[in-house]
Image (cartoon, rainbow, N blue to C red; front, top):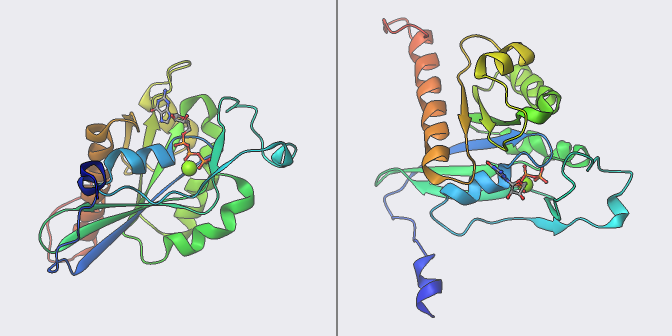
Length: 205
Ligand SMILES: Nc1nc2c(ncn2[C@@H]2O[C@H](COP(=O)(O)OP(=O)(O)OP(=O)(O)O)[C@@H](O)[C@H]2O)c(=O)[nH]1
Ligand SMILES: [Mg+2]
């Protein structure tokens, strides 16, 4: 085994017995695979396939013309939080023909990140609608692709988001930025749990 291979082999500690599952959803090509890759401590499992002419007319690639591959099942990454707690990240496939897989990905999840390309805000409605119906906590992260920029307040208004749902700007390519998004989700879930616990005085902010 060469050193490059050994670097990416990060064995899971034997005491790690609590897995926390987070799902990354959002429209086609918003950066879900990129986000999982930027933060995973192991080489992420990816199910990327080359986009061919056979998909023309089935997939709407008009907004992502430079894209050459797409996720056909899911991305999987891992982050060890401490000796016992491990975060498992699942990136959903963005294309409509694979949406039937989302229910399986949501099963047992702590919460979700909705990744938004602010040039295509409408593509986020489906994700938000499904999460709201499911009652799964989520945060919204606007992935920075440059171009037309909307303020977080404008995106919030366009999505008609519940004011309690955190919304932030991120760069899915940058580990620190991705970490911030995941921490915001965990804190959001903690606040929701505290608010539903009658023994807690903490309120939703
Ligand atoms: N400028 C910029 N480009 C990004 C960013 N995040 C992702 N990209 C690029 O956007 C393209 C699509 O990213 P993916 O991560 O494949 O998107 P996806 O949401 O997983 O796509 P599907 O699984 O096909 O729905 C890639 O070429 C990335 O390099 C970002 O924050 N900024
Ligand atoms: Mg993908």
